[in-house]
Image: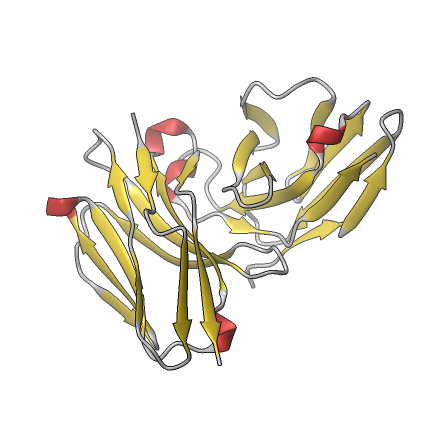
Length: 116
Length: 115
């Protein structure tokens, strides 16, 4: 089973709203990722968690706040977003929390975010 | 610097045609991993294959086959007897174990298979 689930599938929010994206995996993977994907572009890495600790932040604005409550869950808290933040947000996980670069990343279906 | 180039932005074929998607990569490392992902209109990135830099064997999985050539830094993907369900964007990606899991994606090739 290589399933990563994400909720919600779609989200529309205003620039003053606070919302959260959720990601869950039950494969025992120890590394989890957030990516942002604009239309007609490849995914761009935002954050990497390894053993529930933030290991990579790709200079993401502070209006995006990741959280990893446990090894199976990954959240992305959103606050004061801009219209240009509208995109598909993808979560992924991989098995090894240390040698992430050697493992396959399995992706969820994504959340399509629209910021008005 | 690491880089992945997918020169074909869009490809359109008729069902049952064979099609090859090109991928050229750049890296200074001797140990690295290459991947192909499929992204249908629904949005999910579906893993297709992972290959490490020490394994140059070509691979076949049903109608899919991959040709890895280190001499030309290429990792091409061929779909034989294409079907409408193959219509998607295909991404080639490079991973460096020293980069903490960061995937370097190509720009993607949008494949359209017409009936």
